[in-house]
Length: 161
Image (cartoon, rainbow, N blue to C red; front, side):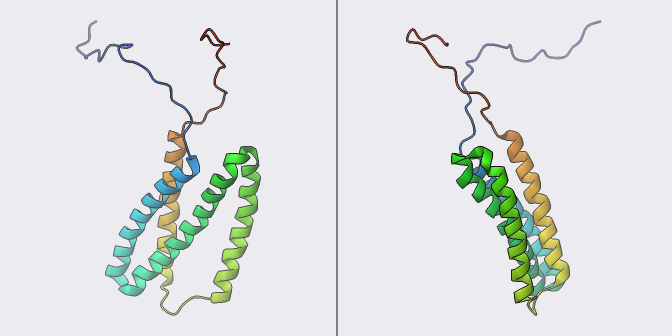
């Protein structure tokens, strides 16, 4: 039995470079997630404006901005702590999560809901932002190059140890 499929390019004809770890993983995730969630939030805000006017778009943006701030704090902590103490970053993530949940709850309960807030669009903005932020983070983590082993040391003759 034969195939008419094209075999594709020959292997081993090009140079293969060394690929090191991803530089500034947390900041790269912050930029990617912010851009994707922001774009989705703009689309949700347009829908909010078309259906409920300015209060719809403001409520949508307010809900999304709270979620973005909530997640951005974690990535900023990961960037600051992860450079010096990668193994301690997880513990600090947990502590930061607790402080964020309590802090945001206190702020929302103390300030209360503004009169212009439309609860449906607030929720839609928050949910859209969470879904797209998390999807972007998963994508960003899947593309990250994490160096697990140290680079081999070279001897004076230029060979690896």
